[in-house]
Length: 297
Ligand SMILES: C[S@@+](CC[C@H](N)C(=O)[O-])C[C@H]1O[C@@H](n2cnc3c(N)ncnc32)[C@H](O)[C@@H]1O
Image (cartoon, rainbow, N blue to C red; front, side, top):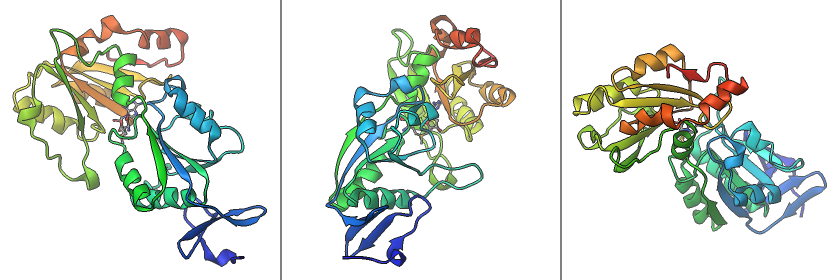
C-alpha cells in the first residue's frame, strides 16, 4: 500500500503524519508504514530545575520516540532528551500565538496513532492548570492508551526555592491554588470574600497580568493591606528573581523590578519567613549567576 505525499496532513508542528481511512501512517526516510495506536505518557517536567524531574520522567524521556513539549519546559530539561529522539514544540514562539489546544490534541493523537511511544512533556504538573485533563480526554476519545506522571508543580518549586513554606503552624492552616487568568481574557470571576482568609496561603498562577485587580479585590474583601506578598519569576532556575512585598505595594514593586512571566504570586503570613528560610536566592547571588536575583527583598 502506498500513498502519495499529497495526502500528508501538514501542521506547523509536524509534517510527517499521514491519515487515511482512520489509520495513521508515519512518513519515514525509508517509506511509509502503518502501526497500531501507540502509547502516550503525559509527563510533568517540574518548574525548571532539571533535577526536580522524577526518576520515571527521565526514564520515559530516554525511551521515547517523540517528545511533544510546551514553552515552559526549560532548556536544561530538553537537554535530557537523547539525540535522535524527535521533538515537537507546541509552545508560543516569540511574536507568535500559542498553538490552540485542539491543534495540540490533534498532534498528540496523530503521532500516537503512528504507533510510537510519545512523551507529552508539560511544565510543572500536568493536572495543575496544565490542561492535562483535556489532552487525556482526547486520547480516550481515540482509544489511545496513556499514563500520567505527576511533576513538581510551580507552587511547590517556588515555595521551596524562595524560602516560603506554603503552610506553617500558627500562620497558615490551608493553601489555595488559584488561576489569575481566565480563558480568552475573560474578567476574573472569583468569590473574593471566600478567598480572603488571613489563615490561608494564596498561590496564584498566571496572575501577573491581573495583579493589581487581584490585590485590590483581596483588600476590598477584607484582607489586610499589610499582608505579606511575594512574586517569584522563573522559580527554581538559575534566573530566579524574587520580590518580597505586601499586598498594597506588590504591583508597584513588581513594576519596578520588571518581573516577566512566568511569575508565581504567593500571598499570606508565610511570606514573612522568606528571608529567614532562604537558602537558594543567596546562593544564586553569591555564585554570580543572577546579579539581580534579589529584587526589593
Ligand atoms: C499554564 S500554568 C502551568 C502550571 C504548571 N502545570 C504547574 O504545575 O506548575 C503557567 C503558570 O505557572 C506558573 N509557573 C510555571 N512555572 C513557573 C516558574 N518556574 N516560576 C514561576 N511561576 C511559574 C506561572 O504563574 C505561569 O504563568
